[in-house]
Image (cartoon, rainbow, N blue to C red; front, side, top):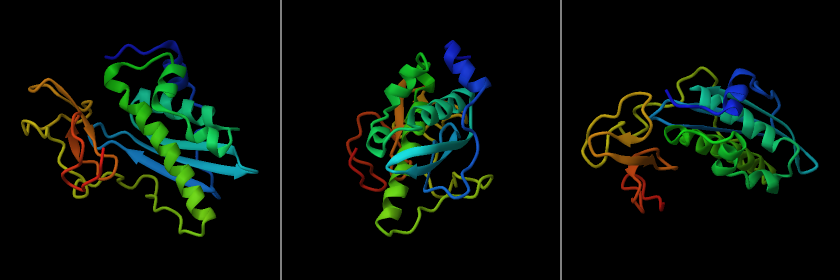
Length: 195
C-alpha cells in the first residue's frame, strides 16, 4: 500500500467541493483506462474568476484527494491563473504523492483544464463539450486501446499504475486517444498526436 502524506489522507477523508453545479459554465472530464480513475469538474465563472468549482470522482484515495485539492487551488482564481495549475503543483500542495499515484495529479489538472476549455468554447459560441452522465461508463473498452504493454504485449492488471512489470518500464497514455505508450514515444501510432 502506498504511503500517503497526512495532507493526502485529510483531503481524502474530508474532501472539499464534492458535487455538481447544475448550471455549470464549463464541464471537463478525464479518466485513465489503466487505473480506472475518473474525474469530472464543474466550474462557474463570474467576472473572469472561478467563483465555484465542484467535482465528482470515482477512484482511489489519491484521486479523491487530488480532485479536492485542485478544486481548492482553482476556486477564486482567474481563468488564466487556474490554467497554470500543474500536476506538480497539486502533488506539492498535497505533500507529495507516491510515484505510482502521481498520474492522479495529471488527471486532476487535465480535468480542470478541460472544464476551462469547455467554458472558453461556449464563450466563442461553440456547443458544450460532451460529458457522460454520472454513473455511465466513462471508459469504453471499444474506444480505447487494450490495457497492454506496447513493448511486450503483456496485459496490465486492473488498478495497476502504468508500469509494465516484465519490461520494468513506466508507461503513459496518449492524451488524445488514451492508447498506452512507452515514455519515450514522440507520436501516438493510433491517432498521430504529437507528444
